Length: 110
Image 1 (tube, one colour):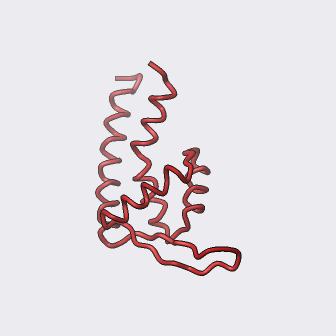
Image 2: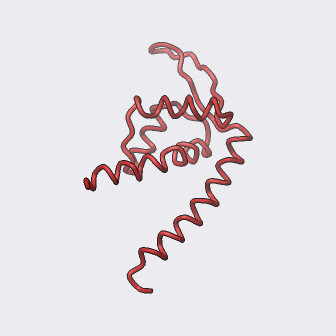
């Protein structure tokens, strides 16, 4: 089995959570989201991000607004909805439980 494939799958599994968490700090342009994820060592390309943003928007977790740009076409800025904030809270709780369970099972000291 290829370790790089497993690592990629692990990253994909938490990507939506990380996007929602990023947007919990305020609205953002997709490039800002990508930069934030890159700073955290989660490398994401636009071809991965945009479908996720669309899916999260269609699920009611995100909304967006258009802003005119001086240097090109209008920009779409995303933010969490109230439903998205509640969903993120559930994911926070689930992540805490999962992280604890993984730490217990992978701990070198029983």
